[in-house]
Length: 93
Image (cartoon, rainbow, N blue to C red; front, side, top):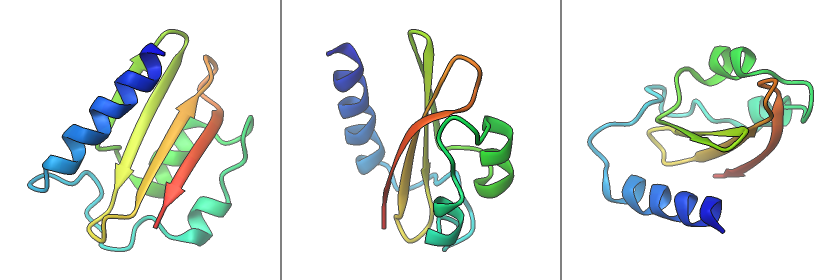
């Protein structure tokens, strides 16, 4: 429940802020890049190479959450396992 509240607050805050977007490329979050993410395999470093630094990093328990948003307001939430591989992700374009 705490994680859902944390993500909800983060989404609310990010929706109100348009001054600072972490991903500078207008189309950085493309379906081709997102489709190359493999849960349990893709690492944090590989994601950083693909999308750059996230707009938000949220530690929560044994997991970490990264949030990316490009200039076209495409967004990507990534949840990492303790070993920094992708546990799950959610993409909206």
